[in-house]
Length: 226
Ligand SMILES: Cc1cc2nc3c(=O)[nH]c(=O)nc-3n(C[C@H](O)[C@H](O)[C@H](O)COP(=O)(O)O)c2cc1C
Image (cartoon, rainbow, N blue to C red):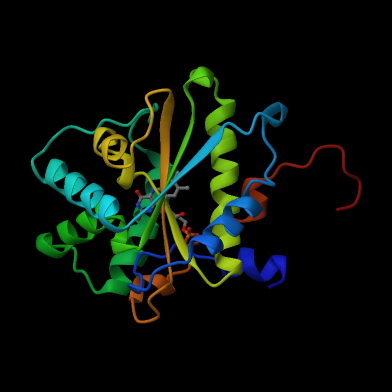
């Protein structure tokens, strides 16, 4: 696939076929993603690629704790809840997804089921947990670098016909992930990526999220051409 085709065609995939993903293909994707730049070439990331029983235990543990009301325990700062334009965009994509799935505003049961889907890693056959070396904790560069490699990874996956969704839902109950993926204490759990073959019949997979226009996003200084 051409670069533009990958970047413009990729969307977050939240419904998967049960078919397994070959380990060699995942290695190929990770290797491509790791061509990402990083601060001073530190490459702070690690990938814990989980499937089968350990992943099922993570799904079950996440759902159990979230439904029991156990408070979130992410290992990084989340800031304040979104407001203003950020909140509008958050609601915007949620409306697109619920619209595609036919989930009504007042359908509490299906809305709850949608949320739990995220904690189940969207029932994907594979989940990649991205962590970084705790020795770098406190620097904003390491999470920045993990973001870069995560984006590269979902694009590399897309270029091979695989779908993915970067998500926080998978790591909100970090002790569950740490236990079942055997993540060492000297690594900070950053983010999860659900990965697998997209289910072509899952309506939300067709949603193309919006982007703000370049005029809002970029400021050009000192240019004389336009
Ligand atoms: C850091 C980060 C965290 C995210 N967390 C979630 C999540 O918990 N659940 C979810 O369904 N999508 C999650 N997403 C996916 C975003 O909703 C999605 O990327 C955004 O709406 C743009 O849509 P697109 O990926 O289809 O272009 C996350 C994405 C990023 C980059």
